[in-house]
Image 1 (cartoon, rainbow over the protein chains, first blue to last red):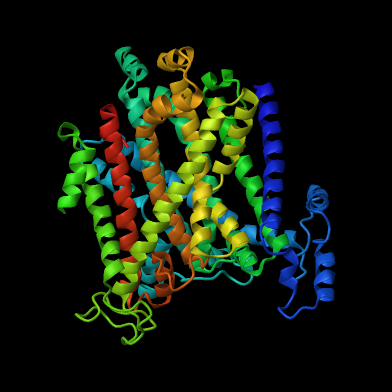
Image 2: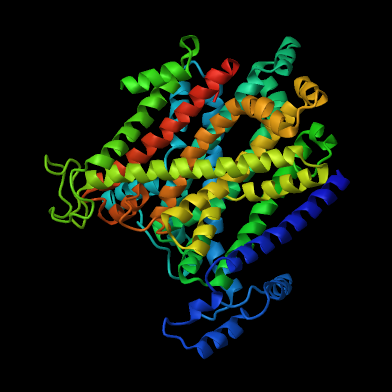
Length: 320
Length: 284
């Protein structure tokens, strides 16, 4: 297990460096110069040169990357081209919206999908089992922003229960106020996420229920519920965990859409604005944090799988 | 409708005909039909703003008008065109790149195979939408960059699946026999690999079509999609969001159209899977 952890950590590190390089090069090789963000359309050649020197665009791409990477190791993400404010504090502030949103939505989706998925599998012949399967089938085709729009029209504009958009100006100074702003976004994301999760939980449960080991356990006198808990949970959890990792990462990055619907000042809306303004330091900063989060989640999911299922530990390759 | 039925007869042998395939073909067929009609006839010109603003449904405007007085049915019909075009083209881009990379990885020396697989794992960890946003950010928003962006982002998933399936076929004895008898790799790919991996691959490509349609709608909703006058369903939703209470149909209709198309292709994928592998029938 120790050698696996070492290998998997090395893989995490290497893939992170490569991902950062890819993002950096992708943004610079494609048409458009980072200095454009600073200039008006009537800029003189001297102004253009000055702007390029200011953002470092006059140097070779490799040199720019090394300079940026050296900054990164000190957790310094540079300064925005547009506002000249340091990037990191801005990201940190926005994470206080996106992280609670992601985690609460994920927790809610997990509860919904575990209950719904297991019920749909065990009671596959009852009307409610079939209904759950049908709803989850329908749910994966529903765009998250559409659910958001309908939520706003019913619960904010129609019933006036909750705010339709925005976040308190003083952030979490009044937690109840902040939570009220996050309620609809959390429910929206959780509903859409639990549709696809329910399908995986249902399918994993069906595999468990139809398995030989469960039948053997029952033949040896174990009760149905006991057999499910003792043998089923651990076996069924393995495939679900890798999906959970992907779903958690998707929710974190997918927050851009739901933040846009509800006007939340999160990481996603920061990225959207940075893209519109060609603000390269902000784009790179958001992608740095997102990539880190996504790769660490993948790492944790892989390690968790191996802790649960000893059979996986003999597999040689560092990645699945 | 008869076209749908005859298509069904080709795809599904009578013995294994599955209701999901029928339902999927009906739903997708309806969207295709609307898109085809929109090529030759639209109720109004797409830019025609002569209608009363935010009018309810009437004989003149079947599902009402938007806040600029444009006919919503017209917008919705031309939106079907965009959705199908982006879905098909990005799946084509994703399939060509993904299958090529997957085959290369499966045939390559182990160090190259490992590097490609590791790179694919990293790319797959990112949602299609974020990768597409990045590419659109660098390229500028246009129909072409949306298609390339979604296609590229999806190609990693296709590549990984192709690699796994190809490896499995390469381990079969008939491939060893073909190699021993002197068949070169292009022959092996064309005669043994592609026909054997296609049933599973096509199911995945159908699912990717749905992912692409949703990604396009999301990009357009965020303002990063094909610019006007392309009437994307995502942009219609974005425009209708502010007036959802006075004119709910404007927000409801494009959403339902999107769901119809995506669930339709998902049903087709399920149906194809049941046909390809009857043992899995009823499991999804």
